[in-house]
Amino acid sequence: MRIAVVGSGAIGSYYGAHLAHGGADVHFLMRGDLNEVRRHGFCVRGKGGNFRVANVNCYNSTKEIGQCDLVIIAVKATSNGDLLDLIPPLLHKQTMLATFQNGLGNEEFFAEHFGAERVLGGLCFICVTRISRTEVEAYDCGTLAIGEYGRNASKRAHVIASQFAACGINCSVTDDLALERWRKLVWNIPFNGLSILAGGISTAEILADDSLRRATLVLMDEVIDTANKCGYALDKTVAEEHIKRTETLGAYKPSSLFDWENGKPLEIEAIWGEPLRRAAAAGANTPRLEIIYALLKSLDARRDARQPS
Image 1: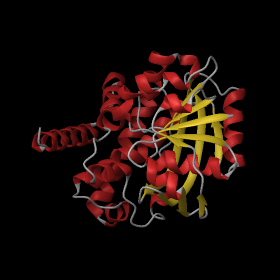
Image 2 (image 1 turned 120 degrees about the vertical axis):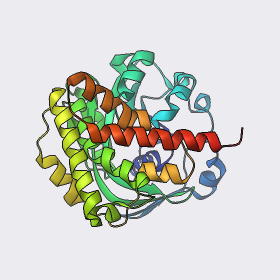
Image 3 (image 1 turned 180 degrees about the horizontal axis):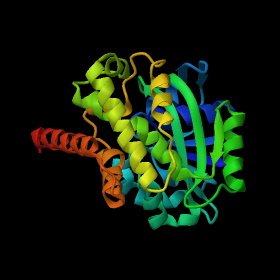
């Protein structure tokens, strides 16, 4: 399988490097880091093992990459509009598009523009950070779940999962991609939001503060209740499972906090806005999610207003 990775941040670099290290035919789209990666390769370290990929197939244009069998989309959801021009050169008739992005609405976006039959999703239950242009650190190598958009898992989903498993990734296949999206939001909504709103703190600091820990649990309950009202059966124990796992991570900074501290756009609509709109449509009561969404939008807008034109 010829694989393109579009988006070489922490997620794209981590999974792409694992695939390349395992012998897969991987091609990375890169921009500013292209020369550094060509010179030094990719280095992955932390939980799950340390390794280096010396010779990375990387390009600054999808036209240079050409047609692929699988396109892994790992850009932030805020950049989806840019992909309308970037993806077509990668496509042949059977090319699969797998979005490894956070939040809700990404599969729908790619289905609308490139055809629902192409679209799959990847749920990355993982904690990784890109600590330099060529290095990724894993705090928790976690799991990856592959599913089809709007369909039960097909043979191709199992083929993709087998490719990842052969390269050392704990990868499974799900028949309910949407359910797993909500399961991940139970973690993403509170930890990504509170880490920013509490002044730039880690998950460990959130859990060590009694008030923030309670706020986390209440937000988790709101998300679980919304998922159930939307028809996706999540048990209350999901919150406890997420908390236990997070306690093992140490001073981990969620991806949204990393974006905020580096002046990058926040995935506000995908992570908080779209779940809130679906909660309202389903009649779920989510007052704390509404507050988190409003505060993050306000912070982001004020920061944009301060940027020089």
